[in-house]
Image (spheres, rainbow, N blue to C red):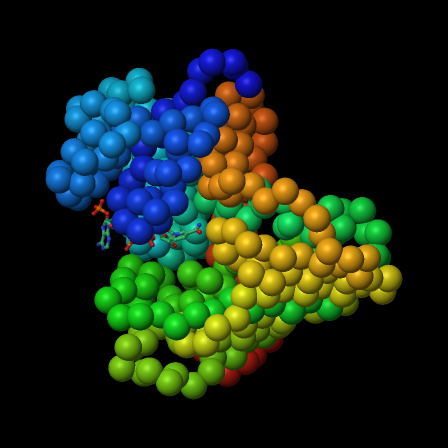
Amino acid sequence: AAAGRKLGVALVGLGGYSTGQLGPALRLTSHCQLTGVVTGSVEKGKKWAADYGFPETSIYDYSTMARLADNPAIDIVYVVTPNGLHAEHAIAAAQAGKHVICEKPMANTVADCDAIIAACQKAGVRLGIGYRLHYDPTHAELRRLARTQEFGPFLKMDGGFGFTMGRSQWRAQKKLAGGGPLMDLGVYVLQEALMASGEVPPVALTARELPKLRPEFFVDVEETIEWTLEFANGARATGWTSYNANRNDFRAEAKDGWYEISSAYGYKGQKAVTSRGPVTVTPPASQQALQMDAFARDVLDGTPSLVPGEMGRRDMVMVEAIYASAAAGGKRVE
Ligand code: NDP
């Protein structure tokens, strides 16, 4: 990477994830730093400018994103708004000529993913997804085992991610969230299955929505859903996600060994073990700092991303198929 030059990042949407994780992580990065924000709150914008030391002229709102084009201090725009707004904000950033990182899930629909990819291609900018787990060394070990096939191909995978979602959330509204826990948490389980498959997508799947315990809260989104992915080599990956029960694990079995991880999907605290014993790695100070530094280096060096827009789209293809199968009473979708 070009030594000494840090790329400027503007975060779009100063909510929980930006405030708790991405802002702090941008104090740890070597190849990028926070140089602007896009927010609906002038007050928040001013506080961030003071805290992170960028000028108030680098505060934008959602209607003034076109003006990012005139700001050479901002190279990368990182979209951290509710899922249903990702497409609008990512496309505005690309049209302003900025490289784009888009949070997961990439968008509410595959069609919106296509629109983001097309806008970035047209503008000649890079596009990456906020898939932080790809930069965690415990997950890198799963990908390494999938690549080397030291245990043989993983043929039986199972994972789940769920917790009790409180009230108050756009996450329980279909328009802004695109769906329920599958969009928010299930995408991680799907990602993990595809890490184990060597990033080979499934050829078919089936899915089933489970009865709602809080139907008044989860009106137009699922509360719990489970699925089975079928791969061309005969492998199967079952998955589960819920806003009403706790789970946070993944296991992959091959003929000659297995890999298992708990606290699988959190920001830290991953515990991975294989049939050979514990996976001993140094936990990163921040998955998000590694993820953003990797994106910045890919921009500077012109190297391909580990988590490109196409991967975000790939996962949304599975999500749409899971919803389609569940809606059709568990019909097999190819
Ligand atoms: P929050 O609700 O905490 O924040 C969302 C922010 O988006 C708001 O604070 C607001 O910022 C802005 N916003 C703009 N329009 C709206 C609107 N109509 N309704 C609500 N907020 C709006 O969400 P999170 O920060 O938890 O999540 C944001 C995105 O990040 C989601 O896509 C989520 O999936 C993803 N995420 C990813 C994580 C990961 O580990 N990779 C973890 C957590 C979230 P402002 O006031 O500045 O305008």
